[in-house]
Length: 331
Ligand code: UDP
Image (cartoon, rainbow, N blue to C red; front, side, top):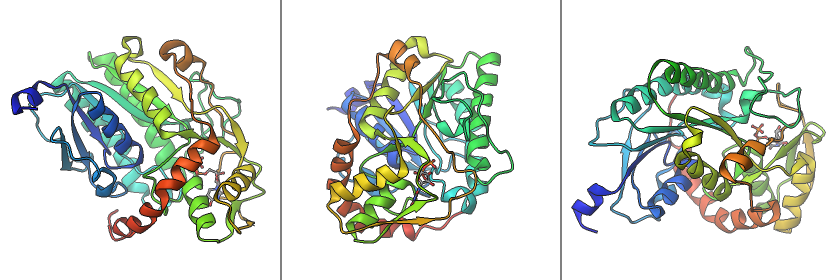
């Protein structure tokens, strides 16, 4: 491809483009014919998540979204995905997380306005907190402990959604919000802290799987390629302008069942061990995805067994590469 042809490609910017979901999204955007720029401060993202991509249409820029965004020639789509998202980080990086999701969102929206770019804002099922309705529809207002240990993330994301709403009211910005439920797949850091990489790491090294509480809390787990498909449809579907949508798998299982499944798939000698449960850990979570089915004609296609097997295939490499991130220090 010539330089002129490259300049004529649509341009997508992905904040958090070296993170778990961001890196999969970048790969998909390149496949879809975009020129892609990532903005990442590499606090939880890893450069190696994109090292297998040798494509001149990809540019990687070191940038923290808490700072005003750099200038570009033109931007068509902005995927605002930068933020630590693991509950184990919610206390250690609380200020970073709160500011990334508040100031970072402001910087993203102001910048998108300048370029007239469509924004896809990554929100989360955490906006529902410990939900009192089940499954969760987009119209449910949630049950978040505003002074709890998860608040910097939960309330940070809720604020970014409220700010999006304000910008939509007062400007002609096009923001589409995706509430992402638990997602997993290759390129999650083994030390990420979330349950699937933790259980895989433990099962592969023959350690006991650490079940929090009695393991009867539930989640659903969406394989990352399904999520990325949904995110792309949100960006390309005009009816999504200004709207919000859940994306996640609907197969609800207990964490104890998940542990048994992982041990079985890995064929591990590990057993399950029961530990205390973190405060404010939601008891139940399952998305109602009727809206995604109706507007995007989207539903997940990868079942948990298949997705975990695909993740395991990539896991050995990632366990080696995890050292790099462990050396990054920030606040
Ligand atoms: N969990 C667990 N053991 C672990 C890590 C997580 O039992 O080593 C539980 C956690 O308490 C929660 C569920 O698994 O009930 C999902 O946790 P995760 O951190 O993946 O994401 P969350 O859904 O809480 O955002």
